[in-house]
Amino acid sequence: MNAKVWLVGAGPGDPELLTLKAVKALNQAEIVMIDDLVNPAVLEHCPGARIVSVGKRGGCRSTPQAFIHRLMLRYARQGKCVVRLKGGDPCIFGRGSEEADWLGEHGIEVEMVNGITAGLAGATNCGIPLTLRGVARGVTLVTAHTQDDSSLNWAALAQSGTTLVVYMGVAKLADIRDGLLAGGMSAEMPVAMIENASLPAQRECRSQLGAMQDDATAFALKSPAILVIGEVARASTQISMPQLLHA
Image 1 (cartoon, helix red, strand yellow):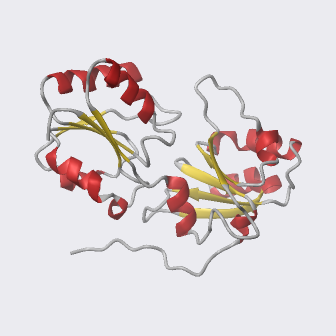
Image 2: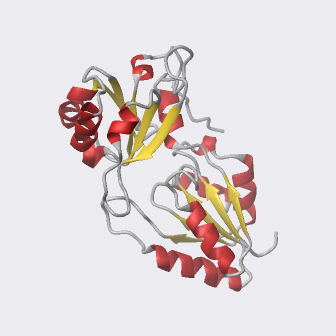
């Protein structure tokens, strides 16, 4: 593998949801720059690599993005094969395109490897189909945490007719509720709040839009968590929770 930077999605947490392409990149990595939300179990695929923690988590002290850029560039210019390992998918609230553009501007080859995003995995593990014929013909992924702390157009989202999957929303439940209610969404709209998607510690709290903040408080909901808002959250397909396979 030529010296370059791989931007790799590690998936939502379950190490068995790692893609074969991600495993291939990790097998050949010399430097792995890992985010906080990545399950350390995936590092078994890169036993010879140097592991560099560059944790970024909402509400906590984080490694500055500019420093991460410079570190990737330094290692790549040393001729190292670098894997930037991110939770979920690099291009779904993972700043993957920002990093790829910056590295490209500095002459560094970049390859992106998709990962399964937490919104999909968490909903599936709870038996919730994000799209369902006759109920939801689309799904909208949004983040409640914006760079400038501005509010989303919740009124427009309320009228979209799609399932809403909200990332990084635990601290803004009241804003989400009020914005969607003001946009005309019913207070009885089903909501699923899913913590630690795909991990053995995954928990879910079923609620309705009008009551979700109170229910989340009673449930002691914590980040990382995703919200699934829509009629599909009324569903609970009879599936078995995925179990980790052990040799």
